[in-house]
Structure formats: structure tokens, C-alpha cells
Image (tube, one colour):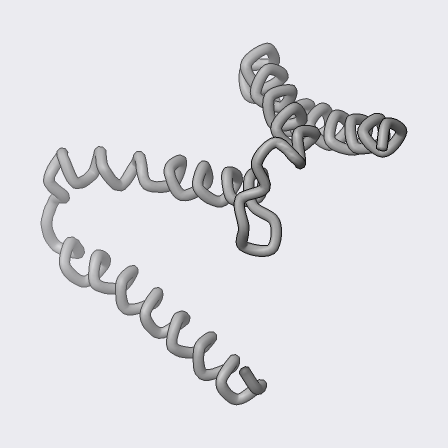
Length: 112
């Protein structure tokens, strides 16, 4: 893919995203949103974030890695436990997850 095609893809995605978002603003500008739709939209952000995080943990170069990359899974588990223990402290969760990821990666490299 050359740079012209890349820019066309970026512009197409930007236009599509804008139109999708604007359609909700334009459609619901002068009326109340149905409660079921409002509830579904509240759940969209966590679902999208979970999908992004999962692909970052379980995929490398577009392929599922399985248990070969076990430090990623262990670091994710540490981050989840720290988030639950600190009741959602973002800084504590990120620091613990990154420390576990790099520490366990170092330990895994020792045993190769």
C-alpha cells in the first residue's frame, strides 16, 4: 500500500466515524434518547476498551500468541488484581501491570 492509498483509507475512516457520530447528534438533538439505547451506549465504551486491551495482550503481529507469551497474561492478571484491590486506581494499576510485564519478561528471558 503506497502513501496515497494510506491517506485515502485514513480520510475514509475519519469521514465514516464523523458521520456515525454526527448521526446520533443530529437524530437525537431535539428529543430524549430511549432508555435502552442510552444504557447500551453507556456499555459501549467499556466493551471497546476491553476489545482493544485484549488484542494488545493476546495478539502479536495479528496472530493469537497462545501461552508462548505467558508474561502478558500474568501481567494482565496482576493489573486486574491491583485495580480491584485499589478500587480502580489508574496509576497503581498501570505501574503494577507494567512492572509485572517487564519483570516477568526478564524472568522468562533468564530461563530460555
